[in-house]
Length: 257
Image (cartoon, rainbow, N blue to C red; front, side, top):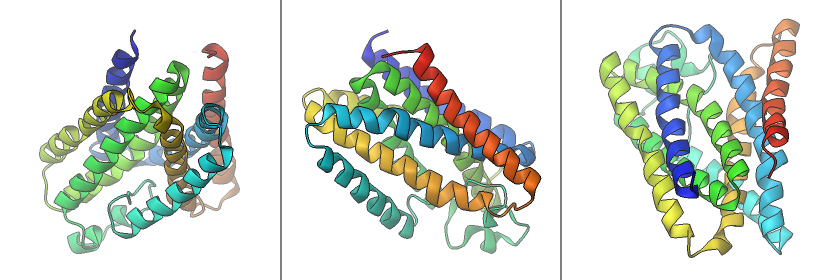
């Protein structure tokens, strides 16, 4: 396939597939599996960053210090976005959004519309990240897309919970999330054409992708795992995180650059 075709397919899968999978969790009360999915997503995110995305960004840039500075700035950027309630999503099964309180407590001041706006922005950025990764290397694009899908599913489960507790029906919540997911395709398409003549920006976009994935894994996902302190849970979490990393590493072996 051409690079553009890869971007379109990966963007659709990252958007639509994550919505369908999340609906199975959120709409069919299968939240008991969500903790395991979160652990696997952490491993996939960290594996993609340290085994693929950052090394590729460094290899493409003549200024390693600029790439590392971009990662640092990206982490600060996503922290700021989280503070203004745009980037923040509920990823884990013990999130306050899943606790049996009243509707107002569930929303914490965030309306269903705000959730969709924030999610659409997030999906659009994911599309640009996918485009930048595929423009750098097809293998990198596939690994990046896998990591995005892995973390999008638990995020979308949280969004479903907020919408349902804001008064939306199951069908309406699914429809709104599905429409929002197409922002990934829009971001991927625009990213492909915009970056054709700005290849110099690709390593820095990859660095930003690394910072977003690192921030999601460390700030959003890992703290939720600490709420389960039994040894059995800890062993399961470590094994599933390792499985996520192993999946990325295995893709590197099966699909060499």
